[in-house]
Image (cartoon, rainbow, N blue to C red; front, top):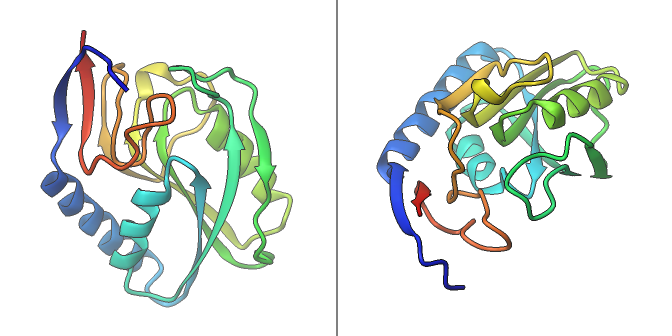
Length: 175
C-alpha cells in the first residue's frame, strides 16, 4: 500500500512498553486483593491489551468485544454498533474495559452502558491513547497510556485502512 507520506514517530516501542508496564502495575495495585475481567475492544486494542494483561500481576480473565464506529474512516461516525458481545458472565465481577484510543468517547460510553446492564461489581476503563480535545461523549478514562493532541495516529494496533496495526510504535503521517 503506497501512501507517499512520511512517518513521524510519536511514541517509540520502548516508550510504549515502559508505559504499559507502569499501567499494569497501577491496575494490579488497585485490584491487589481480587481479580478482574479484562475486556478488550477489538480490533484496535488487541496488541495493547495483550501487552497490558501480561503486566497485571493478579488473576485476569481476558475476554473480547467487537464494536464499530469508524469503518475505514479517520473519525468516528458517532454511531456505535456492538458486533460481538462478551462471552464471560461478568455479573458481580470487576471489569476493566481496554481500548486503543478514546477520542469522541462514543464507543467507550456505549460499551460502559452496555456492560453495566450485565450487573458487574465495578467498571473501569483503560486506553492506550486519550484525545480529550475531540471528546463529545461525557466519559473520561480511568487509566491512560498517553494523552495526545488532535492528530491522526497509526500503529500499535491502530489502523489506517486495513493496515499498520502490526507496527510496534505509534506514528502520524506528515503529508
